[in-house]
Image (cartoon, one colour):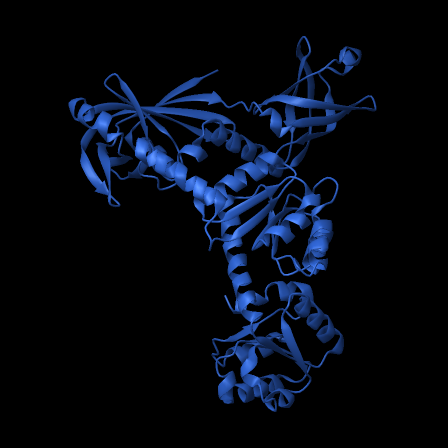
Length: 503
């Protein structure tokens, strides 16, 4: 049942500020004409809207300065439909583009309705559960905050209607969600699970899916990007369309991202977000077995890889990528809902660059991706020089050398710093790594000795301090090119992040 609520000006400001921070389409009524816009800014007295179609609506707006605005907002599984009236103050310049300033509305009327997900058939949203030891697989018809509907023939299980079914698995695009719920017969062959028993992580996964369906069903990711100033001008739309096409192809200097997930909705949504909000070229696949061939053929700058996939899982894919000399240098970012520490450790041992938990926040993904790409650029620079490894631990030294050489990094080993200083080609070393078990004073002495040689004056030095006091003593040198690494870090994980000292 819909609920209506009218809020006053102070609450209206809160709502509009929230809408301005997100992508929302505003439906505008000017006289008898309809158009669309987006909310650009809000203050205590005014709101700023992107300019409407100037050829059609400019003159009409000044003839009918009072307009009616309506928009939709999703809050969990609750759809909020806001509407308000406002009056034109004037046309302004906004970031070198035309926009309109309107009066802050005195009230906003909100119609609250439950939001229902009607999954796209290609998403293959399914339920798996047991009834009297018989495994059931059913395609989901709809999901709301109160029930999950599906169809089937369950006449033989009448005695289970109204009882709680445990260990139900809902396969959503972002995760496999475990829940318990009450089994209900609605009518005919239509059934539902209601009164869910879930934890916060499961609830968050469902809300994430609801939000993705809200955006996709209203084409908000297709029509509006953050900061878009002309969402309704014909020329602006055509230009945006052409830009998206160009971004799908990528530019000669753009980074190439290989996106691997068995769920098509994930590759579609994440791929489109990357194409529209960055200049990355995106190659996507839903088949983990194709990953190695695609990586060899396209030489991507980074791989976004789902951990839990049918057939060959993410760990197996990453291991094959690391075993191939053509792909072993490519940074890998895992995306997964797994909290299994054993899997995390396996990923670290393979030198995976980062590990993102689902549901993945796009801004966080983008931040990690930019960091990993910057580190990879640094690794490319490192491949054009040599690394000097000062280490008195034979086992660790051999493992580290093996990892670096597998990524095409040239490295020379020295047990004593004097051996490095006696070299005639010291100008070829772009990075020095120090891992010593000696006394604290020895580390300070070695660093000072290296810095006194002009060729090593600004060379990055990465050291493995044995104690906190050793870290503090070396940090007191105030050396901006001196970096510290956790002593227990695995060679693969250390090598994966080596480029950060050149980024």
